[in-house]
Image (cartoon, rainbow, N blue to C red; front, side, top):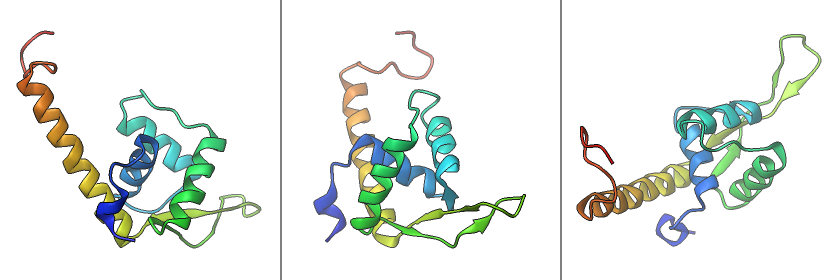
Length: 117
């Protein structure tokens, strides 16, 4: 599968891939990254997160990292990392979204810096 054929990307999938662009994370780390990256506007519940992660794994956009023990040594967390294909897809989607934002600014749907809405 090529990256272009996967665009446009589901917004939830984009945010998950975007949060992993900076490195491997476990599920809770992805949830917190998505929340931070979206300015608190998107909160993923575990069921939706892991459903999306399974699909992204199946499509080759994510891969599993090594499991790591939690501090108490009893529980092991599963980590996820973005693949090269996933990185290509998230970059294409970011460019697509930037183009849409530029068009919205031209139509004055998004105020310029310093303008009030």
